[in-house]
Amino acid sequence: MPLHTQAKCTACGGELETGYIPDTGELVTPRASLMWAAVWVKGIAKARRGFFAAMRGGGIDVRGEQPLAIEAYRCTECGHLELFANHEATLDTTMVR
Picture 1: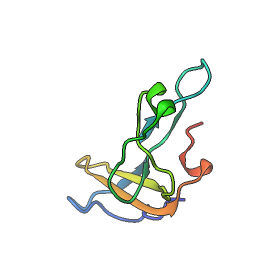
Picture 2 (picture 1 turned 180 degrees about the horizontal axis):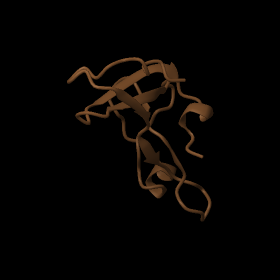
Picture 3 (picture 1 turned 60 degrees about the horizontal axis):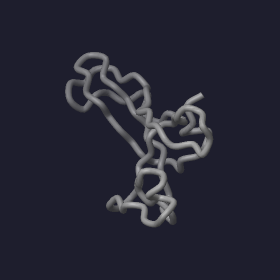
Picture 4 (picture 1 turned 90 degrees about the vertical axis):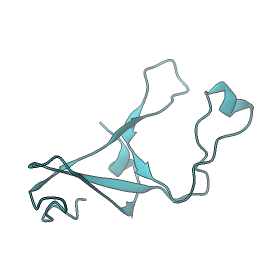
């Protein structure tokens, strides 16, 4: 749910257009990679540990953290990006369909 659609670019005052930052992930099936919108997580990234993490190629451990959906806006004049993270990330806000 975009909150900042009426905002202006902080760099030049131009109009902002809504967008998203895609990210790819893993599947436990032989299908292609799953894609979703990137999220913001508080703190410093911690590497996943253990046998299964190693079998999947590593990654970061976000267990116990509350990811926030990233609202991304691009200035149509200068290309500057404005990012906001104010809402809990859910499948509806992060899955790219």
